[in-house]
Amino acid sequence: MTIPEHIAQTNGSSRISYELLPPVKGSSINTIYETLDQLMPFNPPFINITYHREEVSYLKQPDGSLKPSVVRKRPGTVGIAAAIMAKYKVDVVPHIICGGFSRQETEDALIDLDFLGIRNLLVVRGDGDKITGRFKPNPQGHRYASGLIEQIIAMNNGFYYEQYVQNPTHTHFSVGVAGYPEKHAESPNLEEDLFFLKQKVEKGAEYIVTQMFFDNQVFFNFVKKCREAGIKVPIIPGLKPVSIKEHLHVLPRTFNLTIPSDLVKEMNKCKDNQQVRQVGVEWTTNQIKELIANGHNFVHIYTMGKVDHIIKISENVL
Ligand code: FAD
Image 1: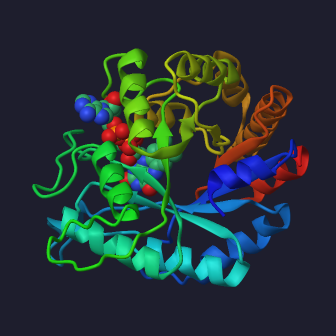
Image 2: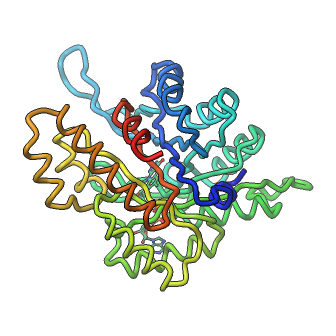
């Protein structure tokens, strides 16, 4: 089933989808299963699996010096998606990115996904370089998510990038995209960002999942502005409970977002991260309850690692 079909089917009931990261290279897929065994009782409509491109890491040498090396720390997105779908009979949404891929490599990745029976994709550009912050596309790849959407929709219509392909089969991908209630970091303002968000929808995106936010009013304003701009597709709020004190500084810097002063005050009162986790549970629970009360009964939660706090939130709201 596609994600818009899931949304249409909820009939007013509340649902939570979860986003997982592939485990770090060398870990067993059992770490994913252990997490999902705890989350599946909440009957998630779908599970997202993020994609992580290669990055430069400084590896310690025997003489103590640091050598820059290109490493891919979290491979396995496609394999994990297929394994989850087979084991739990749940829809999966692997993320697919522009960064690091040529159009030809993207085409081959899409063929793998199609052969595995995966229909739903979350299409994102990928982050900029960790040091410079600048996004550098593959010379034969896509600079923006909208270009990648075009390629996917072309395949759905039977047009492949490789010209020699004869009688190409039509794929049936359904595409979701990212939206930013507090604007994307590189965008000069929200209006400009919405212009390009609308472009992604016009190219074929069927729904939007938002970047995390901690103030529901920011999300409500974003939805209003999207609707005024003519963006009509479903907008799924993305949430992340704070769980460590460092989040106060890391999240705003990494994701270009604001943490409301009431939440900052509560976190500053905490003596340890156990208390921060409790504050995170309460804050996100209240956010979800208010979202549901305002008709947004489909919510997406970003999980990173342990999920005990996410289980509590799910119990509180479902
Ligand atoms: P785009 O839509 O391409 O936009 C990037 C910037 O360019 C924006 O500022 C936009 O306004 C502007 N823009 C867009 N089109 C044009 C144009 N034609 N001309 C000029 N400017 C334009 N990253 C990963 O690496 N892996 C993941 O799995 C992943 N999953 C994510 C899931 C969600 C729900 C979210 C919100 C983000 C995710 N990201 C992921 C992070 C994402 O890759 C970054 O936020 C990235 O910087 C932007 O991706 P995008 O698809 O929104 O980019």
